[in-house]
Image (cartoon, rainbow, N blue to C red; front, top):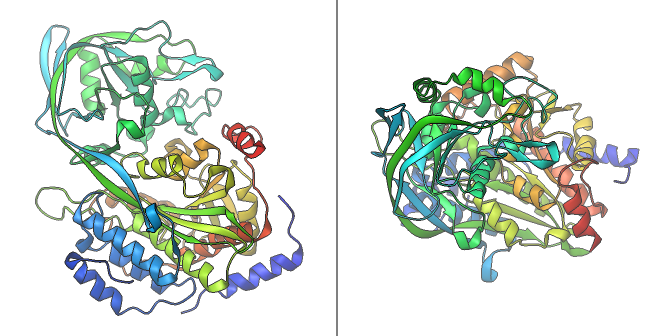
Length: 563
């Protein structure tokens, strides 16, 4: 990265100070209510709290029904984003000269009357969906049956040869059901010498554990939930696995898939292990030690999982601001537009997803408007609102496999996901801090704002692997995921922690994630200024930020840039 002289820093300071100056309708009759609201709002050409609030309020309204892919609310959402891109003047970057990139998907809804019939040490019992477990299939099959499958505890379910760790060593799990701990070896023992201690690696993600179990040939896999290891409660698991589930078609995602996969509640797992003559607490300790050997359980499981399935499609929304000097090189801003839709039941069952992630989509729209107002960049800038994040980062996975710009010509990715509405902060959280030189570019702007860059407060949560930029990172493209800080100007770290706890307790993946006119958006504006600055710098200075030495994704980037 080239250094930036004082005159540039002064220019940055002036630009940031000038940023705070004072939606088009979706198509179709279903969009009439939000369209009428948006028509009364006059958007400015700059980063604006009022504009941001209007965008979030619209996309998180009940009319959008929680923005589930494949639903009427999902279609309203992509049309609304398209209308914003048209209003701003972005070029279409999707299929066949449109703003849309079609993402073929498989919708699967499990029958929630499904039970797991257990034979534990010769005693029959049942585990019920939602209370004791959740289960589903990614195969697309309407019926999946597993009969008398032996349960095997495989610790953390990790096979990491570069770390000398294999929980499947000497084990044949074909036809068996593996039971797995969430997170990494070392986490529950708080052993910094194992993996990255309390900082989750990709091996700790539930998605990896299912992938690895499938590679080993298991009939099914069940992850034991614990709130600390997962970084969310059982209610989040239950809500996320209830109702329609989405996936890419097998033809678009050739990774092996399990016949069935799911989670056990901590209480159900403890009872199961005790009935099988095992102490789960002791096995937690054993699984955190090198050389751990899998433990067959005196238990078998049978179930018939019925699902309704259908092939549908969802859409990424892609807008491009074409560069003047290097139009084939691009910076990508991205945010996922999807959320959990609406569920059956009494009371408020619309999962509006205001923070998660109407804020991120509003953010990239605001940044696009700022780019357009400030004049044509030298490199191209793509603004991609992706679908199916809540289903496992599928829209971005499809986009990376079918990129709008070749990955070797993609300079870097900036992801906006669940922006902080707690107010301005003395710091800025860089999720996965210590990854790439994009952080050096960001530092130029956080320094001007007199903010420090900090690692996320809960590194055990593995948040770097839980948002859409990760698919670009896996492919080798440097990716930045930065957001509002924890040390609030009003109230400090205690206030930041209280805000985060309240959001997780009341709103995260719950109907309570709704727009609130009382939000303090000064911090959002601060974050948008800094993230705009990163993209604008890269769009105009010709640099190619790299991964830091030792990063797992550096080799892939070096190889693509060498060709």
